Image (cartoon, rainbow, N blue to C red; front, side):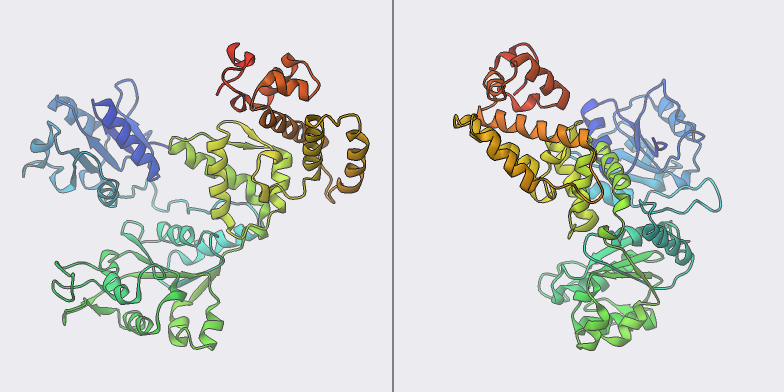
Length: 486
């Protein structure tokens, strides 16, 4: 477990839970204050502290001092109704310049905005570079390129299919660069209408156009000193490409509605899933802008090209789910084999979404090939054959079904080229048949056992073994004995 980096000091349990959950969702590692737990900086990398309902001023000061973090390196979040608010925000307080006030009910956007001020603490002059998940040759090459380009301000163009993790690459480059203490600002150029993109990038003055009721900073200004990530740059309109090129060449821009030129110190990382060389040849993307952006091109491999990283990716996704308060999920050998047969058009993002979906359906359980959504099962004719057996039993055709199904199995069940884990595969068949029997009998264990020609107690044990109790009806005899739940 990583060291905690946010300390939560709050006597109100409900509020403490809200703050903790929000911090975990944002990727931080909060610790609720407890007198029995160490809070010193030798065991944690404190970046922020939240102060809520704590009455004792002396205790509050002692806790802040125990973090042993320089005042300018610690963000202090204070609840708007905290007894400590007035004292901490007054002029003489050493923490006044580093305080952000939070109102309740808590708004996620406000908390995220406040946490952007949290300094990145480093205990060594050359921090270990971040790396993307994966030990395959393809990902090893990507991580090596990230380490090589991070120390410099060269523009980077990240290429690859949708869902391969292009924004993760941009964040890794920023976090490993000398600009890591400055903002990382991202904008999706394809998601914003062309007529609004200029205002989003460069900002606007009050009254510059209808609806401009106040002056607003643009993304270049927000990212000053840091990194600006231009996602889906290939979808940017040609007129906007001209304006962006000028900024990249001259490092100057004007807000919409202003004639005052502002200088900018921003590193540019762009990304696209489109082939910009083809777009340039077809006149849809400016050639001069393409060469300005692609000083250091970096191509992300599709998930199909590094399937060996799938177990490590699933472990990472499970850890993220746990930080959000969800349960994890495990995959059997046959399930992993089926996943490797899938084409993964959505790449790593598609895998992440699948893991989350299955973690909700099968919390803290092992997912087998038969539990996967149909399109991820690959070639699973055995389970289809099993379904026909169950249907035949239901129709009272069990005497004639075996020969017919032996023929089906001979015709359809083929040994994969890479072999198969027979024990795991047979367990998948068994789970598939049990699930179908429960579906057919509306979850009544006794009826499903008759359909499967086994004792009810034997089926109950198998339900426990495979974690299938949730498929049973709560009024079933097995449920009454505590072996089945609704």
